[in-house]
Structure formats: structure tokens, C-alpha cells
Image (cartoon, rainbow, N blue to C red; front, side, top):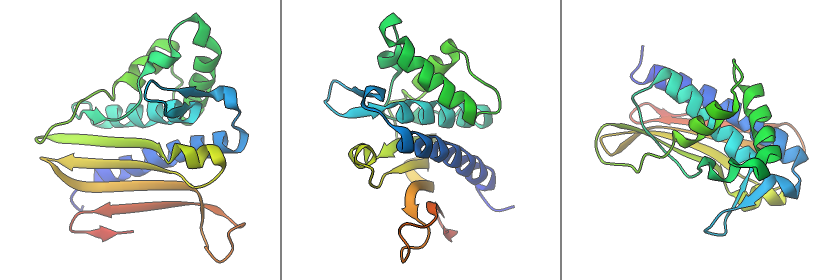
Length: 186
């Protein structure tokens, strides 16, 4: 077995499931499913749902590994956010082997609050890198990396809207790129 084989398999599974959520939302996104954060950047139900899925999968396999990411559950809390929270909960639960409840959803999203550091194992997650492209119906990606002692060792990028064959842009869509330090990129 090659180094990081388990991490690679888990990361691919997490990014594929998150990509499917994003693709589903991408095809049916409505403006009310988007929240504007304090920094004036948009976050969609796909961001929250995919983050919950990736965090849950990572935590189940590597419970001691912290996660660095962008989103927090604050925008989903409160009675006035119930409809939005329920959409996120439904999307996340359909991508997981076991559905989440409201508290699990919020806790799982917030599992990504590690500030970072230069030692140990850390997962870095960027869900819907290119949210503006996502909202415009263009390109975006889901990025996940494993950093060990400040060195990126594994990276997985999911591009749900990228054509498999660039010569036929209207054909099949969805690409996954994987790189492991010292082992190549696929």
C-alpha cells in the first residue's frame, strides 16, 4: 500500500460527494438559497451542505485531524433561518450514509474552525472556490488538501461543471484531479 492511500481514498470520496451536492444545487439554484457574509462574499446552500459532508467524512476517518475552512453555522441558526437550514440538512443527508439531525449539522459545519498551524496533520477545505462563477453558471471547484507539518502532501480538486472532453463542452461534465507529493498527479 502506498503512503497516504487511506487519506487519498477518503479525500476522493468526500470531494466526489461534495461535488454531487454542488452539481445538484448548481442546476437548481435560486437566489434565496444564498447568504451574504459580513465580508460581502456569497455563500450558498451548496457551500454549507458540501462542507457538512466533507467534515463528517473526514471526522469519521480521522477524528484527531483538525480542519481549516471558511464557513460557520451562524447563518443557519435561529428560527428565521429554519427553511434555509432544512434545505442544507436535506442536501447533506442525501449525500451521507446516515442522515444528520439539526444539531449534528450545525456542529459538523463548525468542526472546520481550526485556525491553522505549522505542525501536525491539518486538512484545508475550500468549498466552491469560485462562488461567483458558481452563481453565474460558470466554473468552480471543491478543493481539499492534507497538510502535514506545514507541507502539502495530498490535494483533491473536484470540478463538477468542467467538461470531461474539452472538444465537446456540452458533453459529459465532472472532473476530479488528485495529486500526492512524490507520487504524481492523476
